Image (cartoon, rainbow, N blue to C red; front, side, top):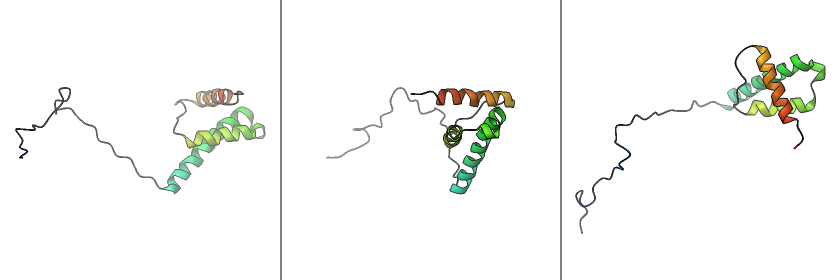
Length: 100
């Protein structure tokens, strides 16, 4: 029994022509200290927004928890002036603090 190329030809599905462009991307490796620094900066950014809206003595532990959770994810606030950023965090706070 012999398996030659004629008997089993290379199959290319009709939807793939072989000339499509492929994008190859690599992820930048970040070590833990860089990641921790980034999370701390995001936490401070979110806390500064609550500090502007409620003054530092008006920040509750729940607000701190929200800032901590937000700093762990990759969601970005809107670009623009501080009013838009503060509005974003205020809306996030309203939806997050609603009872489930």
